[in-house]
Length: 123
Image: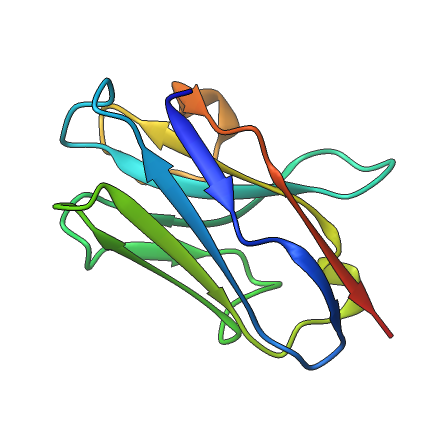
């Protein structure tokens, strides 16, 4: 497994949750790490991305101001901090790595994908 996402669970609206994505040694630097999500019956959508430098980030409008992504390259770990969760945030969340470190929102630009972790937000 090259990417391992974890931290999902069942929370109430307004709560916070912290997702983590661990990359294996097979994914060599530099790479951008993106977060995507897919709700039941809906297409996968972009959530956030962080480039290798750790300072270049980009968020979907739907999560801007509530979600924050950060990374620790030494630990090959990326975190997605999700605050003020809403029922519409309910989805399976995936992390993905882009070996060219572009930091885009297009899923087609990503080379490696984690298995996903389920986030359920109750109202």
